[in-house]
Image 1 (cartoon, rainbow, N blue to C red):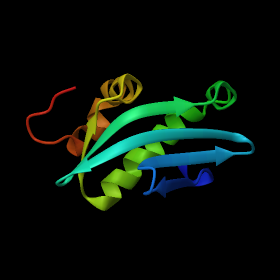
Image 2: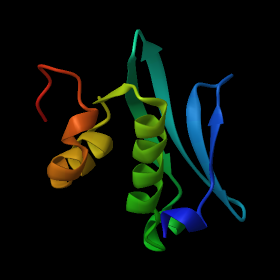
Image 3: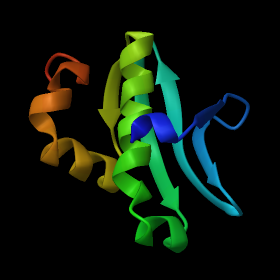
Length: 99
């Protein structure tokens, strides 16, 4: 299902974006060395109700994985997703970081 959504990296605003119709979701980030800090998560209620939360976060995690950098989830929503999916994504965490 990840293939069905297309995320955009808005480098100017430093956020990943998902647009579906008139609804938008975003995850703000900060880059430092070879790490990306996912700092803020926002999704419209309409997209949440349609089940796009996990799909969007998975797509962002896959993008980070493809870039070969570490991920630090500082947003509570992203950290919660990481905890639930620890086994699948633990290799994205920098050494010494546990969620």
